[in-house]
Every structure is written in structure tokens, then in C-alpha cells.
Length: 447
Ligand code: ATP
Ligand code: MG
Image 1: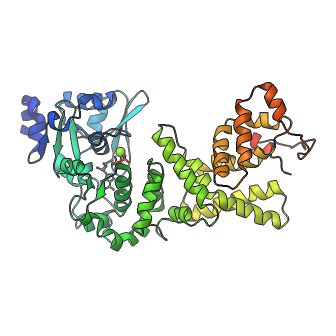
Image 2: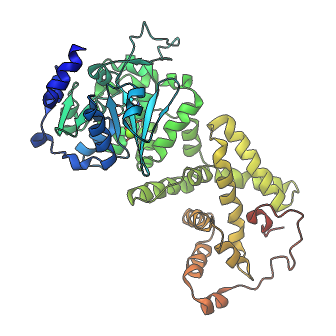
Image 3: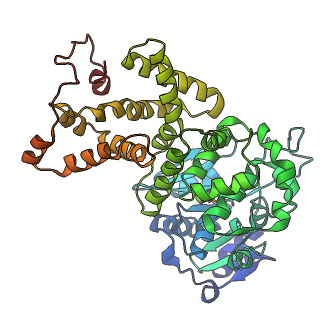
């Protein structure tokens, strides 16, 4: 009560008061001006502060701005409870069961607002036999909120009103020195949440930072703990890693730290492709390049690439056993998706797009009659064509096929007519199908 009153009266010195024993770094030193923060994030901190609460931009965004990178998104931390946050904004909803967060929406941007929370002491938290925390849902204060974060670089608070940074763990100096350092005892913190080992590797690769030796040391010893992490969580982290824009660098680092074999099934798939290694590496490079160029990169495309050579091999085996090509391809896709489900935990929601990309591949071979025009008109053409180019670049199919499609897309009507090949290979009449469910399936040529 008194604290609140105090805060209201001395509103202007809020940052300094809240910071307590933290370092307060002024604008002239750190040089991240308020306009580096998105309008929506500013509206959230302004709104909460006007309502008498503390509110800061926190975590990855502050770190990225200090490193001169564009933040992916902006998170806000506050002393307001989720219900109090919701009351301040018109479009806000509370999400999460274990720990409630608030999503505040402005147009297409969503700002995630979390209430300060504290990490529970290991002896009061529920942990598994290896020290992994199973529950940590207690509200806390700002200092505790800093302490529960993983790396010092991730524990900075930025106040857009004063343009000051509040630093409890020397994160500012670590960022300047490009060192990724765990807050607290690294071994304890990795045991609490083994995914932090992957985060260390991903963030170091993405940000060009060195993992502090004391932070890196226990990883070799503790890596087996990744086995206890729920599959879905591991999948989410792998996805972040693959879409970090630095997938290749991350994978090299993980391999170097011995963090893949048997621990990260997705990486075993990437690194143990006797036939398709070049293809998979090109797909990852392609994803990194797209992200660097601010283009969207689709997880389904990447997964389709990771599994392509397995689909090819299974398809071949089935055909050799006498199955007809189309049926064999469908069956091969289902086999591979079923197998990966147990191993990689790629969610089913990606299946449709992956299958479409695979099914469209044989159709690129058909370059006569109306077929190329129909293929070109499909919504998924562009992605399937990119996939084809990767296959060409890896040497799996003749580069001339990719070149043909590159030219055909650009060519005028006359040139297209010249380019079309005699339609001899394809069946003259397509068999009527009872239910032409998807355009893709109805047109598979190789029958
Ligand atoms: P990215 O740029 O990939 O978003 P990030 O550091 O912002 O990186 P998020 O997963 O968005 O990663 O997490 C936001 C913040 O939450 C982090 O900066 C960190 O402070 C904290 N955090 C996230 N994961 C953990 C974890 N496993 N343990 C402790 N703190 C974490
Ligand atoms: Mg983030």
C-alpha cells in the first residue's frame, strides 16, 4: 500500500527506485532510443505505467537491440497481475494455464505481457529425479524476475519512458563483450531445464556470442538430461533453431558439443543422411538465406526436405516390389510420416503441405500438353518449384529440368509453345476418377 502510494507520488523516479541494487544504464551509454521499440510495445508500457504499474520491455528484444539486430518480437514484463493487465487494454486476452500471460493486440502485432515471477528454490519446486523443474508458477518482483531468466544477456529491462536499461546481472557488460553467461550456477540451471543447453547453442550461433567457459563446461556431462524433456518442447526448440536464420551454424555447434547423437532425433536425421546430406544442407542454407533476406521460411518446407530422401527410398522399394508408381508414392509418404511421428514428433498439421510438396515433384517431369500450365496455376507451385531447384542443386535430378521451369515461368506465349515437349510419355486420356479430391492427386502423371 505504502509502496504503491510512494510510486504514484514519485512516478518520475520509478526506474531508479525499482532498480534497487541493479545498475541503471542511461541512454547516452547504451544508445538504444525509444523509437527502437515497436509502437505497440510502447503503447503497452505507456498504458501500464499510466495505470500506476511498472512495465518494461524485457528479454530477447533488449538484447537484440543492443547487438544491433532487429528483434523478432517484443515482450513486456510488469508487476500488474494478468487480470489487471487485461483491464488496461481494450484488446487483450489471458492465455496459458500453467502460468498466465496476457496477449495485447494492436492490429497484426501482439505483445506478450508477463507478470514478474520468481524461480522457486529447487527444494520448494516440484522437480524430477534429475532436478528438472516441473512447476514454477509463482509471482515475484522485478529482481526475482531477472534472476529466473537463463542468461545475463536475456535479463535486461528497458524502460521506454526513461530510455534506461536496468541490469541486475551484468548482462550489459556481457553483451558488449559478446559473452553468453548463465545466471547462477550453470549446472543447477541446466538441470532445472535441460532445454537451456539448446538455447545456449542457438543464441550463441544466432548472435555471434561465445558461451562463457563456466557455462559451457557442464554441457558435456549433462547432455543426457535432454532425454527427459517432453518431445513437444524439444520439437519447439528444434524448430526455433532451424528457423533462427543460423541453422547451419547451430548444427555445427551442436555436433561439436556432441549434442545430437541419440539426443536430438531431428539432428540425427539431418546429419545421418547417406544419400541426401547435400540436399538437406542446401535446404538449411536456403532457409538461412531466406530469413536473412526477410522472406518467410516455412517449417513444412524444411521438414519435407529433411524427409525427402527417405520418401524417395521407400517409394523406390515399393515400386521394386511391384506397386504402381502413384500408389507407391502415396504409401511411401504415409510410411515415412508414420515413422517420423514416433521419432521426430513433427505435428500432423504440417502433413498436408509436406505431402503436397512431395506429390508435386514427379509432375515437374511432365512437360507436354496442358500439364505444365495446370501445375503453374497451383497455389503451391512456387514452393514446389523451390524444392525442385534444391533437388537440382544437390545433383539428385538433372539441372536442365530446373532450368526448363525457370524459363517456362518467364517465357511469353510463343516461347512457351516452343518449349512444350511432345506429350508422348503421358497417358493420352486421363482416367476419370470418382472423386478428384485434391488437384494434386488427380493429376499425378506417372501411372
Ligand atoms: P528469441 O530471439 O529466439 O526470441 P529469446 O531469448 O527472446 O530469443 P524467448 O523464448 O522468446 O527467447 O524467451 C524470452 C525470454 O524469456 C528470454 O530472453 C529469457 O529471458 C526468458 N527465457 C526463455 N526461456 C527460458 C528458459 N528456458 N529458462 C529461463 N529463462 C528463459
Ligand atoms: Mg523472444
